[in-house]
Length: 283
Image (tube, rainbow, N blue to C red):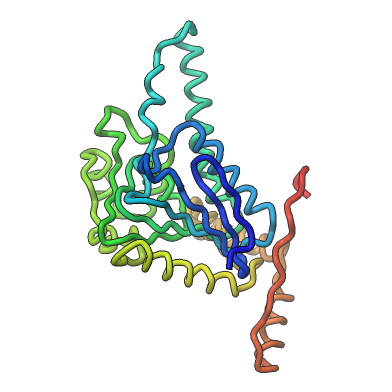
């Protein structure tokens, strides 16, 4: 049963009793394209879920035939049509790209795992979004396309930075240079997605069950694991091991371990507290 629902213009969020949130792209009639409103609402929705402290996993999915057709191309219509000189146009463009990049970097910063459930087309910005998620699943009709190269630009919102950590370098470059479609069977074969499902309903049922399983674990341990995995991706093994010593000293988890073994000895299941709420001012 859903406890709370919040509607935005491009998406909605709902939270179940177990602390699993569903973030759903809702512009199905527009193939879930990403106009300016999306880039404001998506990070706001994730930040709101993160701040509550009660959310233990998030499933990102979409209504309709396609996960996302990517960036709304009408956003390019005004390029160059300004009274600003080249330097000032460039400075404004850098800030705009930075805001868009940050909209998906939020996925990595939030404390809970974010899981993508993808059907149909996952194009351009959709690939940027999926690449930033912790785990990805898709339906048999799904395909992925780095569309930017097909319209005369380099992908600039995270695909070129994150996807090389998920798939082989040679394949990454082939996809980025050619803009060809990679279908579900190939995506699973090379490890971009963990599993492929017959349809959206069966995918969401299975993916939500995985999120529910994550939600039974200690949120403190899960958040630490996510943080350390992301840190390790960007640093050497030696640096990451050193950093883990500091992290585990500063964020001790002995109380979580004690809860687990106490519950086990009593023949029960450990129940872990939510993470702390994030309040204004970072408290």
